[in-house]
Length: 120
Image 1 (spheres, rainbow, N blue to C red):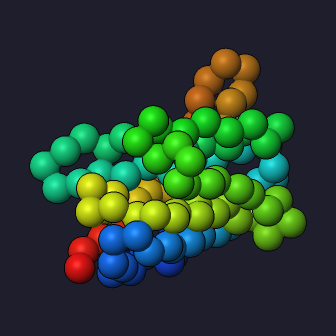
Image 2: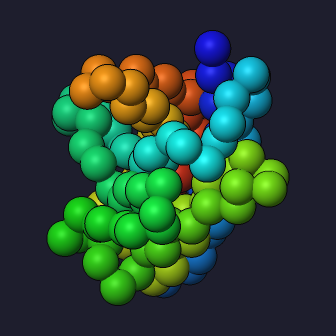
């Protein structure tokens, strides 16, 4: 079982920056998990923001490319999301996701979320 705990959400002005963290715990080998950040605004579907593979490959939603950076520290079992040039439309609950692939089966785990509000 994997437990994921997000932190770093806050109220920030447009143009500001935040860094989200997601710490994983449990009897896991963190480095073999695909990690991602998703967000969900009120009344909308949860969507992928950024993901990082076990080989440190990354991909981003078009709306955050050039502004957000995902990274991971396998020694700390932690994945980060650096968010710069924040916009009001980035306001959402941000969720950490971990996926383990075994024999073609995906085992996914979610954190409880952290709120990011971008407003003046």
